[in-house]
Length: 188
View 1 (cartoon, rainbow, N blue to C red):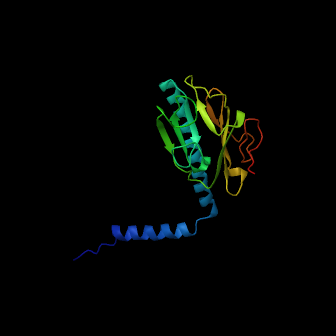
View 2: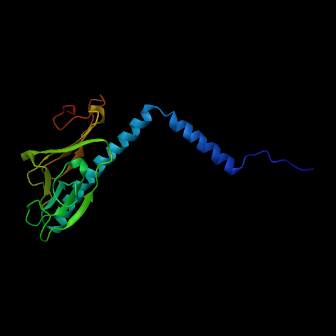
View 3: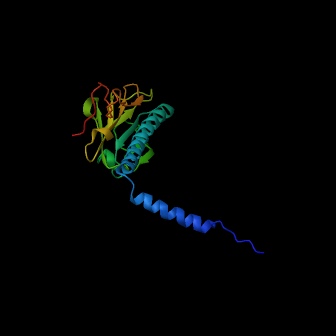
């Protein structure tokens, strides 16, 4: 008497799972796409937060000014924040990577669709950290606004004069984070 195996093979199981996965992906609701965009935006803001912390630590450790600036070419302070940025030791605080300055870190263009801006005291488009770990009189914020200007997807990092950072929070639960003055973020 022979027994017939009534199970399915591993190959059949994998094939069935891949077909189900393709079908689910093709019928995925808009919410899935939105959650992926939220993850990209939060990743961008996390990278900016880490870059500020790195610049601050390097300034203290190296006992010299460190500059964090927008850079579309990865070498000079120019372009737009969403095109990329660099962190470098800035021995003479001239915001130019030259002389004994060293490039410490380069961030590529952001992964999320939208605009990243830095608004600071004195309207500077760079952030300098002093050897004491404070900003060079540049408290302000980094704000991300999505392409569609949806305030529910806007994010902000607030930078204090002491060089400490924090994420803007949605204190009132309306789905939109508030700036340091308690006003809802809006994208224009």
